Image 1 (spheres, rainbow, N blue to C red):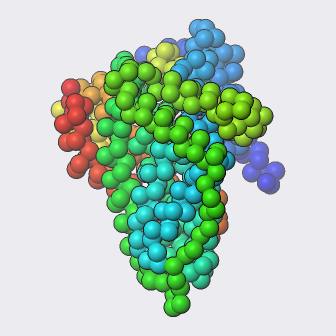
Image 2: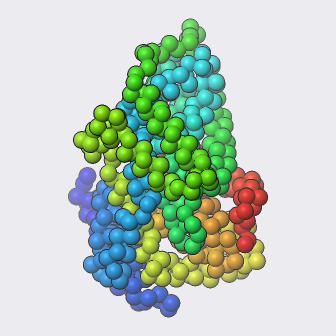
Image 3: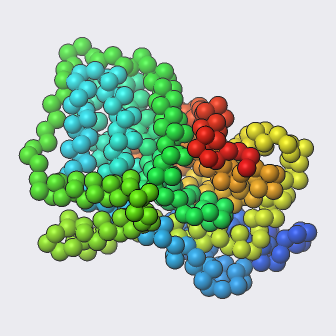
Amino acid sequence: MRPGALAFRVGLPIAVFLAVILAPNPDGLTDQGQRALAVMAMAVVLWATETLHIAVTGMMSVVVLMLINAVDDVSVALYGFSQPVTYFLVGILTLGMAVHRSGLAERMAVHLIRFAGGNPKLLYVQMLAAFAGLTFALPSASTRGAIMVHVYEQVMEHWGVEKTAPLNKAIMMAMGGLNRLGSTALLAGGITPVVASALIADFGGIDAFSWTRWFILMAVPFYLVLIFGGLVVYLMFRSGFTLPPGAGTVDLKTGPIQTKEIKAGLIALGTALLWFTDFAHGLSPAVPALIAMTIILLPGVGLLTWREFETNMGWANFFVIASSLSLANALIISGAAGWFADTLVGSVEGLRGHPTLILLAMSGAAAMVRAVMPNISGYLAFIIPVAMSTGSALGLNPVVCGLAVVVVGDSVVYYPASATASVFIYQRAEIRAPEVVRMGIFMTVIAVGVLFTIVLPYWSMVGESLTP
């Protein structure tokens, strides 16, 4: 990196922090609120520019909260580290790691591809279905993508499809841009639903989301966005959905099933059953995840040694989610989120009494924030408290406002480097940035369209109407 670019990326977050904290205190904003906003602004810039590792940015932000007295107590700054959802994430990542390392996930992917025979259209449809289906066993979109990309590359190679060919681009574009949508539909689907559900529950003053309740609310929007997004990708590259002459059925080898695969399958199935039946036993979703984690790490019984766990778990996720929850909590406790929302309320006061237009304006603002904030945890930590405060002040259901900005923000990837689950896939397929931007614009339109035409009436039917 050139010295000038490095100086800019280091100096910009410092300048933003100083500009916010040294500015005259606006009416209605407490000193602590101004300090919390300064820390959040610095974190947003650091997450957007990726000057520091995303986990380092999160931890540094928590430390700065304490150093400048943006919070009254260290327990407030470390709020995210005490929340069950943080350990829920560790549990589901451990489960996904065990399924992956056992070989079960790759076996499942291979069998799905075998069913397609020599039909590229059926292969594509089954891949879209696998994004949702494999999530139950392999919650992490990054891990799913890392497994599936190799399997599908074997198929493309067997069929003689070049990397730059439309069919390969369609497969890889869908894998990079749509794969994670299957994850967010499940509470156990990774960092996005874990962070979002915790923030919405905390700020909305409601009980933590059960696995079933989250699935009821979010399966419809995200599966619909997945379907329509898949159709858009197909139309973009439809000329490639014809096999080259001489291509035949793919014969992918899997070998005999291993004991460790059976263990992984039984653990994943048992955990899923506990999540599905939470309405009967009332256990927090974190409990089945931690039960699975404990079994997986038991010597002689489980699938991973402690050394394998601590080496491969991906601890950055733990620190990112915990620090994001802490930052969001600091905005709420200090009153900064409320002040920010009041400011937005003033700018859209003319829309009062028009809840759909208010939510539409909120969705547009969320899309713009997402375009400049590649880190999904940072986006959620900032936008959810603001959206819910604004909605509440204008007479909207704050839970619906929170859910809506999750749908809009997590449905899009605007550029290759904006998602760790996508960047390596785009690189392998030689997909150019303009193609990703075009897809991001299409997905924004799809997400907003699905939200307002189908999802809002559906949410009202299941007890979450836009106006309480």
